Length: 258
Image (cartoon, rainbow, N blue to C red; front, side):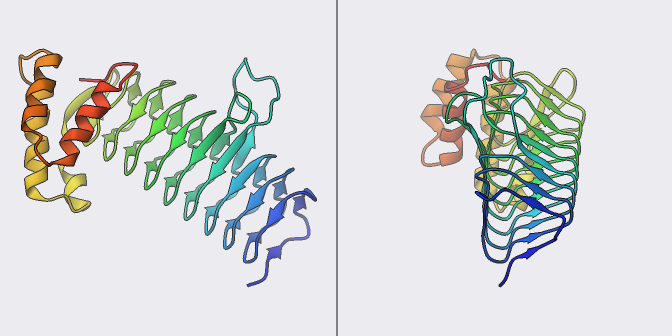
């Protein structure tokens, strides 16, 4: 399948455009950018140097990718944005390249980034993530698989959002949010297990029941965190989701919302 490139598009000679790519009017593609097969870049999108984009992505009008980080310590060093396959990036979204020589801002596969969403320098957005309109990530944030970030949510730098977590609109996130939970508010509070989301993703009743019990032990009992984790480790058995929850908490650097 041939490339389709509108004559008004500006493409740097060093850019690599694979077969099947469609580039619409007034798109700007910078130095050493690579665009994978089947990706469609709609009009007035701006993609700056050192950006790598995979296959079959849909990039809507006025998206800006790969501009320098909003970081006072950035000195113009060579850094990157890497975007995987099958992502949808809606209008006016922004993704900044990393800060720190050879560092990467990374977006995985099958993510849906809605209009005006923002991914700052050195962030990692894994796979099957939904970021609703105007959701914003500060630098060094990590969003894990299947997380849902509501509209107008702001996430503080260096925070982590666990797998299958869901955060309600207009929330303020200043610490980690554990996997499988639902959170909302300003300040943020945890409101239980993301049961509906887990059922939709095919989690078994046994696993959901075990996660609900883990939630009660961690978030609703009178035990200390140390005591709660010790009890969970004894009861985890072969349920990998419980062990993942324990590991997430143990590796938290900012603390986590409870």
